[in-house]
Length: 300
Ligand code: ATP
Ligand code: MG
Image 1 (tube, rainbow, N blue to C red):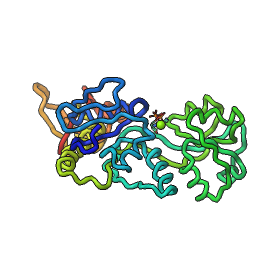
Image 2 (cartoon, protein in one colour; image 1 turned 180 degrees about the vertical axis):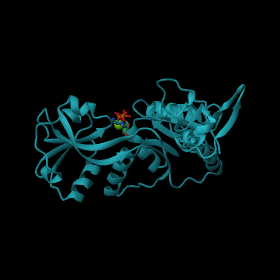
Image 3 (cartoon, protein in one colour; image 1 turned 90 degrees about the vertical axis):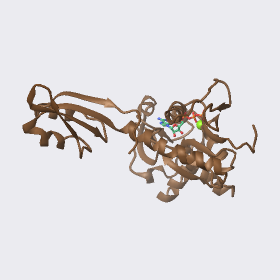
Image 4 (cartoon, rainbow, N blue to C red; image 1 turned 135 degrees about the vertical axis):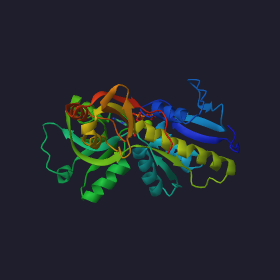
């Protein structure tokens, strides 16, 4: 692994909750990634880019130390590493290039379902297990709460039942894991998504140019993921009411329907998907043949 190679190095999670979507995002941006399952480094065939596949915990440090140029990682892991490095007086510079539209979760405090909870002060004198001691410590300080923090790398959710802690501070998305372990969520202390970060002192002209090519593509892919192409038939008399129901549809395309003078086809790129409720309202206004299609790419 050549430190002075001019190939752009992107760190992403090898296997876990972020790996598939990180890979899919880069794939949608045109990178042909030659992934051989167990390899640490994957070469991109059609661009001067190498992909480093590592544990997500290692990604912030690799970028902050300048070993990798870009990284895709959860904000929770990034912020925890930053706080730790500030405390240790280690380098912790980076730039966030983009907040991505996956990996969403929240870092929450949870207590046993049967325990009484009446605000953060209830945590005074308690023991809280977490994988994110720095983020938790910052929150407890802000709240003026004195609690003991136990750092666990895994199985945080079983700590209360095992008698290791009174409460936990862990990542939640649906809450199903908490419920399965007899816990209830009582405070959200941090909201996270995946982000694309860049090391601060990147100066290589070819690498910067490559990043300038990638960024509009990443933004285009994210925008396309969130947008839908909507087609429907609408009675001419109700056109305005129907268009008003379509999210982000300022300039719809209106097309005549062969052999039908009372109706028109309406085509529109919508900024969000249509909920069933909206579809039903459209139908009650006389719309028919309603199609909601995914968009693969878009550029404004
Ligand atoms: P690694 O082996 O790479 O260290 P890990 O077990 O630490 O993996 P994962 O569970 O794969 O990490 O989660 C990676 C990231 O996915 C989290 O840090 C967080 O940003 C995000 N994430 C999204 N939803 C959830 C969730 N429900 N629980 C945990 N993490 C989530
Ligand atoms: Mg990890």
